[in-house]
Image (cartoon, rainbow, N blue to C red; front, side, top):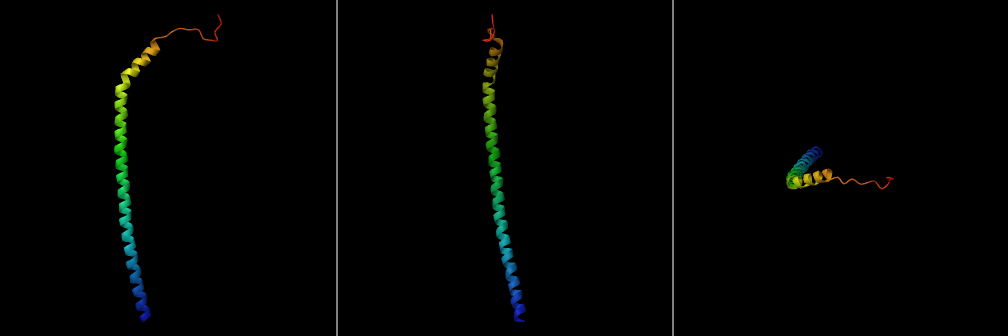
Length: 86
């Protein structure tokens, strides 16, 4: 009878230990998932800020760049190539 009582006490203690460890694991898992979600949101915000900065740079430099390209394309200076023979 004592052996059965000891076994049942040991099983109860093991179950209690397992439940406690499982609870601790769940808490730790929730903390890590929360951190991952927070980092994802922060990364997304930073990305959107950088995209906005690039778009504003594009808009501010677009006319100047187009004018420069048009000038280079339209302002042709004919020259003979250095390998050309006269």
